[in-house]
Length: 403
Ligand SMILES: [Zn+2]
Image (tube, rainbow, N blue to C red; front, top):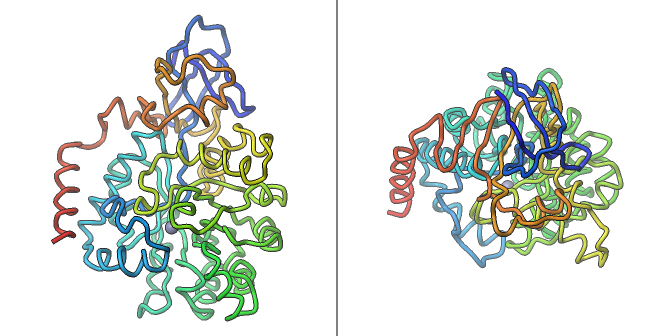
């Protein structure tokens, strides 16, 4: 399979015209040559490193509420009604939305994870899933471990410091001495959560979780809005990726993560959408756009976080966090790619490709998405599933949850 006469986004942050060849599930060759007027851009597929895909079912719910009230009054009552079939339909709809916007891999955290996993496989998106760690659910620790043990692409997870206790974290850490999986968790999302952990444990959430051994095999932490420099040093040392979720943090009034500082201190920073009740879509191009603008505005520094670093966050940094050999257009890497139609008003002309991607492009400019050398999305159609059937299932679940 060969993409001819294209523009490509390469790992050095530059664009080149030429030809890209795929063999099997990998990129086989990248040839540079002049092309008079490339009509398509091929770039690495985006990696959504923190999400709750089935929250498509509750898109937009509870707008305007602060985090704790948003969870308790708007989200938890509906989630309590969700059955495995709802999670399956919602996760599939989320996978479709992500593929249509050029996302080729996701780290998902939600209830009934094997239903999500099944939906992701059917849609053709690469995924890492987990059983969410919560200390107050009887038997949950054993479930979390058994879930991860069953398949290598499954991770360990705790929802957060505040929904687990020390015994739970140490239990997972002990099991992970053998499993050696990354741990997916929410961390220092709000000031209240961060402060209450300090009161409970005399340590920040990052320092406390590290002290339980839970971070000994790395992981990826969503939000990290209130993390200190010392927290960032721990994350760098423990190989814990910071997953920045700018839209969600702004919408819920949580604050703005200090990702420039985290990067300075050696933390791998990736990007995620979070669930789409706090976003309210799964468009990774929007996350790149915000991630690029926020540090420039807050630091009053237009040179902060160049576009190419933001693209790396959304591609290779996320792939590294999730353990996928993708995120760069170079021979040998997995052929997880998205194709963008350059013949759009807002993409013509452009000065610098990285800036075009971050500041001008939308998820809706993506026309094809490829995962592992296989085309899974093409101009509104999904190669591996029946869109009309998926929509009917999804809308039936949405209706059922409202009843
Ligand atoms: Zn989340």
